[in-house]
Length: 109
Image 1 (cartoon, one colour):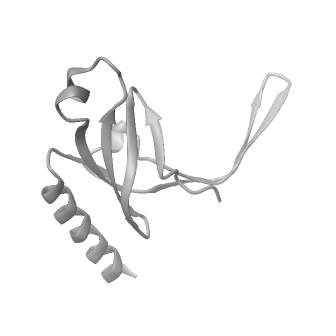
Image 2 (tube, helix red, strand yellow; image 1 turned 45 degrees about the horizontal axis):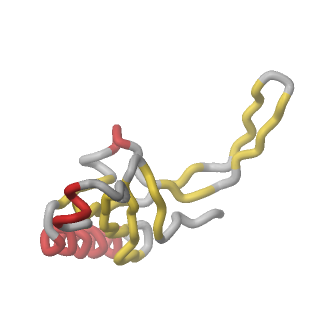
Image 3 (cartoon, helix red, strand yellow; image 1 turned 180 degrees about the vertical axis):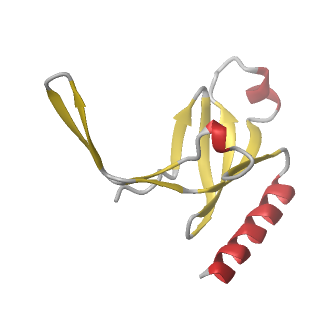
């Protein structure tokens, strides 16, 4: 299985993992646009607490070509936000939410 990256760029933002325990992670989200006012004032735009999702291995056929998709961890889709992904404007709120979800994860095991 391919693990979710510690840092990646998506839609003009760099997401960098701060914490991870099991399938719960806390990322900061920074603008990567060099002329963004956000970068000049404070590069961290928000913090995201996520429940890491798992994509199963599968085979996809497109025309006469066959592609194998390996099993991997993925960031929650936008449609899952509020259930598997949560945005916070400050680190304390994000960290508190992360701690809450990791405690719940331990209790469920």
